[in-house]
Amino acid sequence: MSLQRIVVLLGKEARLNATNVFFAYSIAMPIVLSLLVGLVFGDIFSGMPRLGIYAEGETELLGLLDAKGSLQVRVYESPDVLRGDVRRGAVQVGLILPAGFDQALRRGEVTRIHALRWGEASLRDLALIETAVADVMVELAGIPTPVQVEAVPLGKVQVASWSQRFLPLLVIMAVLLGGLLVPATSLITEKQSRTLVAVTTTPTTLLEVYASKVLLGLLIGLFTGWATLFLNNAFGGQAALLLGVLGLGALAASLLGALLGTLSKDMDTFIAVVKGLGLLLWGPGILALIPQVPEWVARIFPTYYIVDPVLQISQRGAGFSELAGELAILLALVGTLLLALVHIVERRKEKMALAE
Image (cartoon, rainbow, N blue to C red):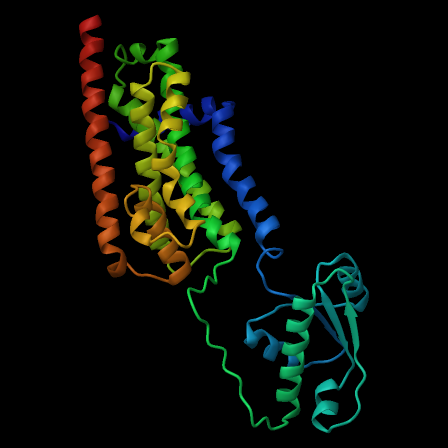
């Protein structure tokens, strides 16, 4: 195999696929879905009341409210912008604090603040906001409170927001779409146009052609996976490890796409096969939307070992040693797909030689 020929073929593949609808779809779809999920589920369905604050001077109230973790607190640079957001429901309550608010509160002076309320805010959210604000004001004023209330959750508590639940499915789609669609559709197109036969008459080998297609699928899957994590603010502190795991996942997807593209007679057959594999491919992402399902069920699906290490690194800061078992399974999956593809390519070369 010649690395130079593979690079040349990779550039050719990129130029030819740039006008392919599946190429554009594999890049655009994960990004569009990430933006939609962030827009729809980022704040509206998080379950946390939304409070906006404009302060004419510095105040410790903001830090105390953030530490509570029970509200979404937005800080505004202008009272007019705050009023506009309250009016349209972007925040349910808006507070306008005067200069010297903290000092007046500690001295016990009568202090006037402006509280704005969205007319459609629920009583539940208003009560939660008022309770949290009153609690931090008592703390800020230094008033002793002889009674402390400790909330004890009973039963299974689900703290993940909908945007967090959708993230595994988004990552799977981002990594798999490019890897599956790009190599498979390119191989099917060349098979139908009989251009692969012409390869045997040039110094370029069939294995090099396949390597360029797999490499392009890997790069697309890696890019869309990285973009999906970026759009969902899901980067961790270990970029190199995250990039490596994403690359392995994209390589597995690309190898699978090349296999399906080789074995499929035409585009209709390929699409039917992908639909048939739907649950096997998207299973871990779908199960993540249902918190009641035990985690061991998701481990049955091969794509679990692509998405779970990515999320462990990006969201929980897991290191290589913690993921060694899952990464070993992912490497075994990549190795199996690679051996299967090489075997099929060699058989195809033999058939092409006999046809001559």
